[in-house]
Image (cartoon, rainbow, N blue to C red; front, side, top):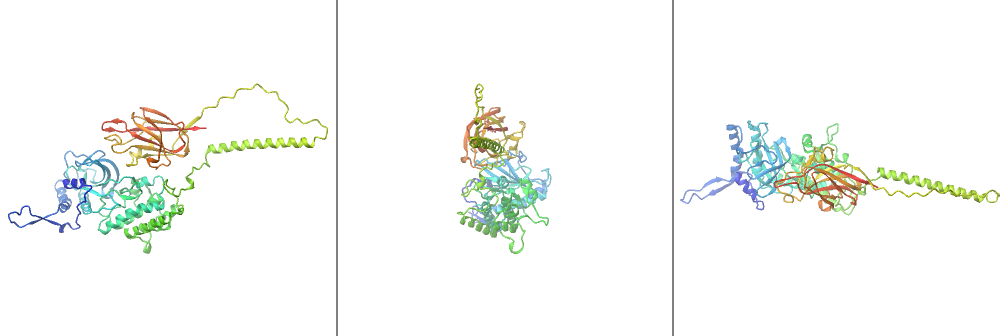
Length: 585
């Protein structure tokens, strides 16, 4: 089995062998042993033998020994653990406890490429105990994965390999696994972290996934896209199914609800289905009315088009009768119409839907200009200006009063009026030299991991660079080869409230030799090529002060790591604290 699946994964550019829907009707003739005139005999296809191994062989082994055979040197699944002799687990992305599944980013050590792996774990804490329920569930999920091996669509990651129960090299706590192409981009939670997505972009993102679900349902298959961590958003804005092996109970109706949930989440930043899945994925659970109904997207975000508002309610089962969306094909047609209508109106400014415009949008919002109405420096300058204007008005009025008095009192014979009597002047003192520009501490409003080609190294720890505690730090993943072997680099994006004149940057690091490019960015999610390099510095052990005098004011600063500390197979960098100072004019 392992040899067959490894051979399938190695032929990435060749067409995969389709899996018949009914393996009992798929036979080949074996004529190699019939040279002496014996009658030819039938033998089952390799796919049929694989299914029989997953469904019939596994329960027999569980009944006899209480566990699945594994290599003697297999270890528990964790980052860096091998999965058979070919794959190495790198980063845990998420989990689906209802399916007993975990989602991992792994590395194919033969083809040197990242892959997405869905692991099926044993449910009990002790993996040596008997788990007939989990074994039966895993066998059924593996069989369904084998039957969907011929399914390919642009809205779903392609299945590369299936590791059935009993495969040599599986850890003892793993019942099986599915290996798929790695989907670059961001998770659903990361896609809405900075705010909701524009309505037309949300519709366009779900359209591709709805097309994949439509074709899968026509072939009698399901995707299992009702879990937020199974879906990823590509750099070009498409929602793709990244992790396969849905739970056995999932149906086509669950896929329709999942499509509605993804659209609802992109529009509102809230997950409308399972509250536990929302918390596990880092999303906020959707609000409900006292009657138990979901609040419409337009109620949370005024400006959402009526078509998408109705589509979300219909797909999530909030509407009955004519408003209910029952199939993925119906949802795909409606999303296609919304996207086409938006393309027809590209020459007109879009309706404000509560989301900021993207940098590449033709029509930009006027509120992208920083709002300075609450700027304390602006209020102080305004008070000084009004005070100077008031003093000037008083001097002008006094001068005019004196002139008018002199004009009307010229014929009275009184003493002449002296406007400016001479005053003995004191010795002139030299003016003090101009004070040098002072600076004050400046704290970013947000920090995030900037990783255009990955998932963000240890993204949950990046806030520790602003906690004021040097003992806590953010650290990159450990790379076996230095940059740019796997990626060009990774960094930290610091965003401020408005454009700031930054004069100095201080970095606390315990990995000397790390090379950092300090860049300014127009937005927090701008691509690397749209950022401008301010300076490049090599970090020392401890505190490194980076002067930024003369740098243009900016609202976003990127610390782009182009060379990691360490060496050999231990390439990693660590940043404990970062602090900024702004110049006071």
